[in-house]
Length: 111
Length: 114
Image (cartoon, helix red, strand yellow):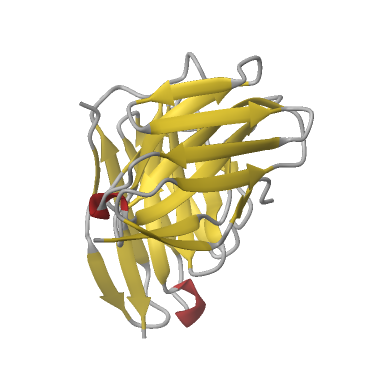
């Protein structure tokens, strides 16, 4: 059961530009998490935002959460070629259920 | 740092073989998970375990089983491998006290079934 859906599926930008990815979900959540995956590797946790938070920052990352719209966005500022990866949102739904991952956004940052 | 290791990065097996994928974590995490990842389908949960000897089915358990005899080790078993089980398999762990906690992933095993 896939809850989070990222948009766009793929994004290509120039180095130095900002990259914005969106995630929509269907049911109430405790928190929403963003992960990054370099090609052919495991996922790495980036940031977690709880349902009572609206915005969170970590370095060049900015995450927003709008629970009324059931959506979140991940902004990467001043992107670098090393940011090239797939980015996944994962939702922790209310109740004793595991995280549910979306299908991901493939970001390409061109030097 | 938490380390999650998987027994193989690449594995090639033949149809009908029994396949074992091993996952070990070194941070005393209670929760462990097995996912498969396929292009266009994202991560899909196969099985998970919230404690030793516990196991629960995820979204796509058919054709798989798991074993959790020790806290640090979670094994995924393909009883009779089939070509449609060719995929990237990812193991993850997370601490018990806060099930909303981040998951820590292994590097993945790319399995090819011929």
